[in-house]
Length: 117
Image (cartoon, rainbow, N blue to C red; front, side):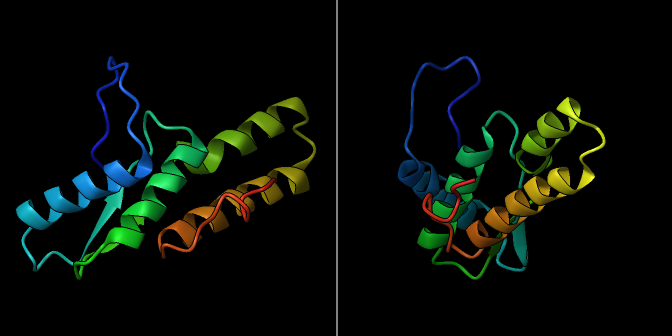
């Protein structure tokens, strides 16, 4: 995923990130590669989800664009769990919600409206 560097003050919207990422992949990755899995490092959960969603909306290649997110799946669940380690059900619900949102984004079907939790 093409993102501004960690020391950059520049804010780039998801649409531009998607355009640059898709162009880079289309120009550089052999067509025999079946797919690309992105990491979420340096992004918030919603930024990573939104960026992946935009990439998939604009994807005109045969590449499957998906996620290999750690932080974007776990951060909210771990934060919730750290406040009450006995609330396993609540922690699982939060993790499952993030997994569903990332899954929708991998199909280009995520919206901020469905991510209200």
